[in-house]
Length: 619
Image (tube, rainbow, N blue to C red; front, side, top):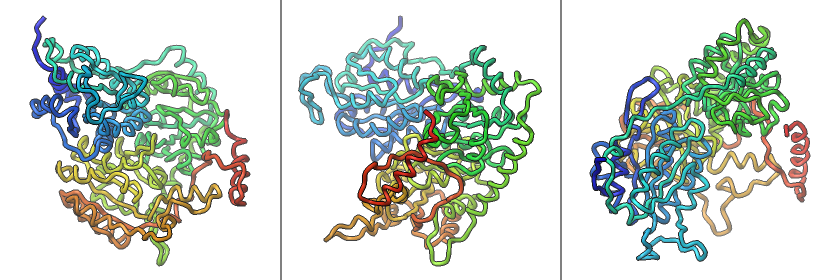
């Protein structure tokens, strides 16, 4: 067997630099889009030297926060529909623990992320080293063990040879359609630098290919029987439709059988917004068209959805309705006590289309939902093109309309990125996604601070698209430093900051559950002797190298957007908005527990409403 004497870090980097993947269209491209690195004493001498040697084959990007660079890496994978990834490497200690939030986000959303944190010495000769956690009862513990619960695969390499089995296992997890998620290879800093006789074949890996999981014949027959007995079915399209590349199959399936489609946050963009049977968003942040159909349907086809509580109205929206769960992950397929087809979404839709024969949904059901879809599209136009009341600040819908309409030709070339606060609800209802991937929302973990870093990852994945990040002032304050990274890398973003002076979304939820305004809006948080907050977001963004302006109103935003689109610089556009108005159309109940005992009458009344709503909740 031919071997090459190199260090473990060199073998790792050469392997991932050589990795190629076959994409959905049959082309072969590098599997890794690059490595984000913040170096320290746990990774600079070993992994850092190896990355420098391979910089032409595998680009290394310098970031400003470990959490931010991991968010960007996850966004890159999501924008590539899980077909490509990025890696991140940190030093030991706080660098590694800063990855936990991003890893949890990737885990929840079933997205791949390769984490390569440094670790303490395997030899233990210099222990305790700087940043080393010492556990009094577990001698083999390091802070990287925090990553175990939020990874699909975790390994600590105590000898160089262990790389030969650990790295292929990690790659297997990230490319598995059912178990896809983040992985961590913890790399003790001395082991990174140790040499071994690496098999030459390991440095010349085979091209990765994604398999499609076919359906079991009995499950498919049962699904066909269930469909044939339904007259008012509704498809709930989740993120699995996008990851399977099943959008065209979904459009054809819906059209052929007359079945309306509603989209989850992860699945939005599965069907073009103007498809005649696209009812829009479903659930807590859903459209009236989709939620009314869900309440009336006699069968729910959940295609590639985790059926989280925002989709199901905390298991109340289509309670006690039969569910056909089509999913590569058996746990997700079986939710809501569903009849399962554990299989790839595209293969299943194509198979069911062949088997259905002359069956159609009730024509009256199809017609009614076409009319509902048309009516909702007209309502979206009205909401997003309305002028704010006189002497009132705009709210999110009016800003969304300005962003959408600012596209020179069509918003189909835009990718909107968001994650947390009020905006996900408004965008889910009101954004018009024309193509798969045009709507990039992280709402499985709803990670405040994902937005700007996520936008950078999307831009790395889709350099020819216009990436528009929409972010509230709260999320901006949590993590904004990757604006500087975008400027540094020359990756243009348009960042629209909606400043409602606080956590407006949670402020409304606080009041809806009977609470008094407390600790959410900035003006409610000034203690005696304190000073009111007055943050100049535009000046802050300019200090990081972006073009930035605070616009006076929606018309000013439209002008600034036109200028930003014509520029090749990252722009940050700040607009004052109100937290008091939101889109009241649609939506449904969401379970937020209300105190059973309180001195406030408002809380007691909210508790009564809460108890009443729970009566329709499925068990």
